[in-house]
Structures are given as structure tokens and as C-alpha cells.
Amino acid sequence: MSVRHALLALLSEGPKYGLQLREEFEARTGEVWPLNVGQVYTTLQRLERDGLVESDDDGDDSPQKGFRITADGAEELAGWLRTPPDLTSPPRDELVIKVLVALRLPGVDVHEVIQVHRRYLVELMQQWTHLKESEAEHDLSLALVVDAELFRLDSVIRWLDAADGRLKRASADSADRADRADRADSTDSAGPAGAVPIVLPRMRRRAGVRR
Amino acid sequence: MSMLELRDVSKVYGVGAAQVHALRGVDLSVEAGAMVAVMGPSGSGKSTLLTIAGSLEDPTSGEVLVGGTALAGMSRNDKARLRRRSIGYVFQDFNLLPGLTAVENVALPLELDGVTGRKARAAGMRALEELGLSERASQFPDELSGGERQRVAIARAVVGDRRLLLADEPSGALDSVNGEAVMRLMHAACKRGVAAVVVTHDAQLASWADRVVFLRDGRVTDQTMPSPGPESLLSAAPGGHPPGSPRRPGQSQ
Image (cartoon, rainbow over all chains, first blue to last red; front, side, top):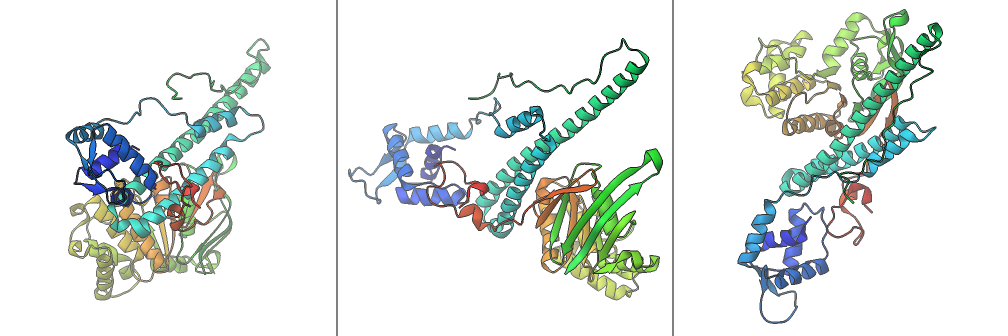
């Protein structure tokens, strides 16, 4: 999240004081995005240095110092709104790695590991839904923030469900193959020996993983 | 008080090599006023659990109690009466009768139970009013939108003095805004003291429940802990979060 651009957006409505900017920022992000006042002033100083905002020119840093957006600032904001965030390369996802590791470790039930994470995520979703139900009905910003979080968590659960199903099918298939191989063995001793092991994914592929 | 109780319930379909164990020793208790979601993949036994809870099917073994009464001791007629009076069903595809208007659909379970047409209709109108549908009462199902049809189905499920609401993927093919509306209505019914069981594979629906039970291969494998109130999401200690990053529920306190 760019605090810089959020402040520009608030200033595009008209001149404001630093403290006012902080309050409005928190209010409009459904108050789930805490911002300390020091961060507001540091960001304002940088914006001023870059010519994107101007301040009352009285040289004092009182809380009553007002800030305005400049023409360059307005242009910067318009560009930012339309620039897609970088979603092209997959982030290094800790949960994906945990499931891959669980799959390779002997004595670990990967379905049990998946369920631990699924339950945790559903519990988080229950809390967010509870919040939406009790507080977000009349607060549009909060409802949007909560929806974003619910959809994000939901997508992780869907991935866990898909992984669960895929692994179940893979182990059934390999049991099947082992079964057939056994039967082939009993009639033809020159046939392929024993069970076909489950093909485990290799974690070597690094292309596209963001550092 | 427990409105629905399943004790060590198992269900087996078929015989011999073709046997399918749909449920294996399921225990489940739902208090009046509570909503429990049952989550699981296709074939995990979710729908079987719901039909057994609704007395539409008998378990192979184990006990089912609705409102404290064991179903096993009831006659076929008693069960039918229980279904008409105490249990409401919401299905994925709504199952409204196309030849009846919205209010006639809602009033139908009461009329089947011997309530006079006028009284049943009045109760149906009240249920539709609560769901904001009184102006659509005379429309036929094919004149209603998907969201409206599902609200009519919910009105039918809670009309009269129903104590147990059983829902199978109740938001069906509705979009997320209508799906949320459906869950809000079911939740409101629970606040009036109805016990609800919602089976779904959709985590967003399930997250409306007070408790989520996970079903896998016919067994209850896990369930969520009672969730803390929403204040836990927003009451993080100052400085407890990296600036500029969103507050996450798990990071609170």
C-alpha cells in the first residue's frame, strides 16, 4: 500500500493538515490500516521535496501547518491509480512451501497439515465475517476492506481444497498402479517390479519466484 | 437446549463389495439460536448428514434427536408432522413450485399441516415482509430474480414456528452480494432462536456460522474454535504492526 499516494488522494480534495490526513486515511480504509503520525509527516516532507505537494510557507512544523497538492502531484496520482500492482510473478508463498515439505517428509500426513491451515483460515474468515455483520453494514469502506480480506483468505482455502483433492487422487492412482503391477508380477516375473512411487514435485523450479 | 443432536450416526448405502460408507460415527449437536456450517468436499457425506438430520432418511446406526425427541421411536406420520411443523429446508436450486405465487409457496407447508388457507396466507405474508418481499408476494417464481427466489425459499423454510433450518448450499448460483443477503437472513432467523445447519463447500458462506465442522470421508475430522468478537480484529496494540501493512485478525492483541 502506498501511503504516499493515499495522502495525495486526500489532498486532491483540498488543502489539509497533517493530523487531519492521518484521521481521514484511517477512516477511509475502514480503520484496519493503522498509520502513525510520524509516518504521515515523513511522507509529506518527501512529497514536498519531490514537488508533489506544497505547504504553508511559514517555516514552522506545527500541527496546524497546511498542505496542498501540486499539478505534478495530481498527475502522479492519476498515473498511480491506473498502474496495475505487480501481480505478474507469484510471491513466495509460505503455505505452498509448507504443503510441499509436508508431502516429502516421511511420517507426516499431508492432509492433516492441510486441515490445520484450512481450519485456521476459516476461523479468520469467521472473525472478518462477524466484523462485517456487526459493523460494516453502514461503513462502505470497511465493507470493501473486509470483502477483500475474505476473498483473499477464500482463495487460499480453495487452493488447499484443490491440493487436498489432487493429492487424494494421486495416491489412489498410485495405489491402483501398484495393484496392477503386483498382479502383473504374479503372472510375469519379468514385469515392472513393485509399486510405482508417488511422483513428488521438485522444489528446484525458481523461475518467477519473487525474492 | 439442543435442537438437533446426532449421536454416533453412520449411514451405509448398498451391500457387499458395493457398500459405500457415507457417514461413519458422526456426533453433532446444534443449540437453539446457533448456526453450524458443515464443510467438506463432494462425496464427504454432507448431503447425507442433512437428509438424516431432516428425517428424510434413517441412519444405518446411531441416534438422531430433534428438539430432544428421538426420531427412531416415531411413526412415519409423526415424522412427517415434525418435518411440516418444525423443520425448514433450503435447497441449492430453491425448489419453489412454479404454479404457485411467492406467498402461496411460503404458506404451503402450513396449509399441508392443516392451517386454514387464510391464516396460512397471513403467516406467509408476514414471513415475506420480514425478508423485504411483500411487494413480490403475488408473483410466480419465474417472475422473480434468483436472489428473490432464494429469499422466498428462506421465508418458506422459516414460516410458522419452525425451529430447525437445514440448508444445502443455500446460495447456489447466486452472486456474492445475494449470497451474503441469504446468509444474513438465515443468521437473523438464528437470532430469533432457530437452530441452523448449513452444508457447503464455500468458505465464505461457512464463515457466517458460529461453528464450522469439517467432514471428510464421512467422518467429522475437525471443527473451528468459538471465534473471539470482532473487536479482536481492530484492537491491536499501538506499534504492534509494521506501518503501512494491513492489520490481520491473527495479529491482534
